[in-house]
Length: 151
Image (cartoon, rainbow, N blue to C red; front, side):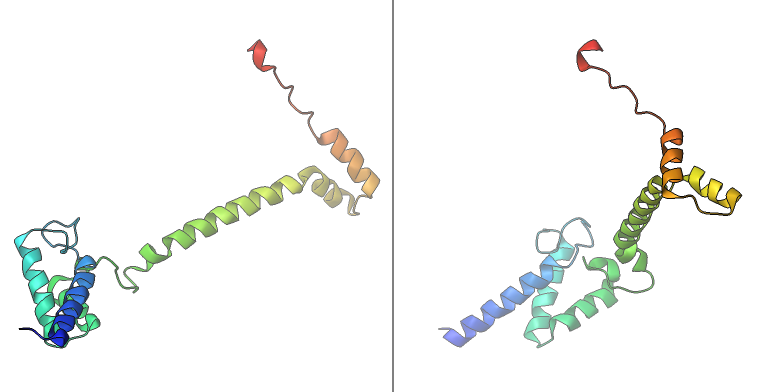
């Protein structure tokens, strides 16, 4: 009969194997982990992972072996290197570009080009009263709001 220690060791091996199997893509299916796939390759990979765990290898060593044997695409989480930098940095690049566009549009709204041009022509900044008069003259009136029942 198996001792309590052997049962705990088997449970540990099984838990580690399942954890690793969830993070490894089935090379035949492509869209499933080897834990979820019933393909022959997935069954063999699950057995290989369990054998590697029983031989005393760490999770990192097992991931490295799988990556060396099947390529980086077998892992669900690609490493950060020069080839995958665009993949990892693209959300930050898009967010930065959107923030830049928003800031530029906000700045353009606050800056009145006509007053800036007049300052350049005169060579002297406008007084606050002159600025207010210019803004009143150059700002178009708001568009008339149509009543929703007249459409």
